[in-house]
Length: 414
Image (cartoon, rainbow, N blue to C red; front, side):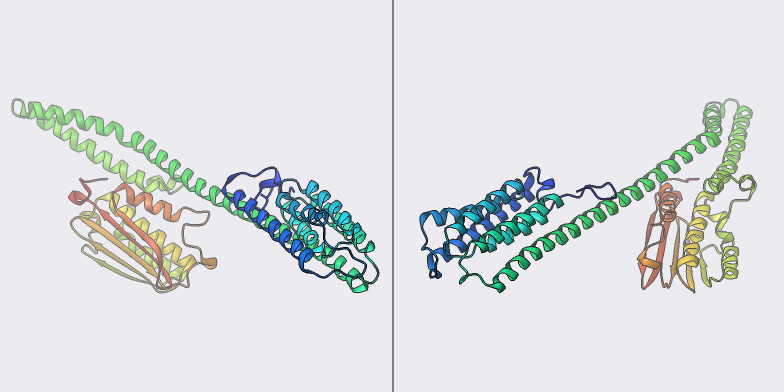
């Protein structure tokens, strides 16, 4: 059955009843065979143990054969539903013509349920009509002393309930399969968007780094080599080369600061010329957020006023951006007061931001929606070989970033 969404749900254990494949289908085969054997044992037990009804005939080998004919087809009803229904219907009618002892209705009920559940709607309807027809014929062939009005009503009602039950179960299973497939596709699309966002950002960073600093770095490398060779023999030329290194390095640092400042600022021209923010600008950020309604408890230790002179510019900017992103998420999804702790040392900066909740609606976490907040944080921290922990904390949300620099980061990084 193909749904309105265009997704063809898988059948319960035998996909589309086109054939048995895989471990799950093997279990389905074993289940069907076990049910068929149980139905056969029940029918044979009635033939062997139940006293003959008035006007009935004692059990014979033919009766046992007919009983096998309307019970064993259940074992193949998933793979050959119409054949199973046909054999069962003929065997029930032939069994009833012989007026043998024992009620043949239970295998018919089970087959109607099985075909309606495991096969398509058309096959289920055929099984329902055939079940009604065969049981009507079987009851009509019995002596009036054996079949009463209650037997007619209960038998036809049970066939109808069996069909409706199988149809409802199959419809619910197919609906769940469609929903599960849709959820899987949405999750795959979200992960693919995140991967594309990370790849695009890395490509953009690499391209900007090359365009901004490749020339300066090349000049620095050449002039440093010149200074190394002539510093003793021609000190003036060596000093000139070192001056060029200094000038190029300063120019590269300026361009790097601009780069790091605009990578995530969009295409606004003023972003290129605006000063790059850093830890010294966090109090101003806190003030702006307070005006927007978010109370922030800020504590900065190590270098409260001179952070740009202590922390490398790249780390300074990254720490600021992490505080900005975390507090923005707290403003949008958390509560007051948020707590910000910034610790600056000679080798690293630790940023810790907590908000008390109530947290995001629907149990989401910052960065798990259409934006890339946490993805961006992780990328920024990864540039410096740092660590980022983000997740629920005491009913709210907590972000902790450790940004090493200098010897702790394996060298001074921009």
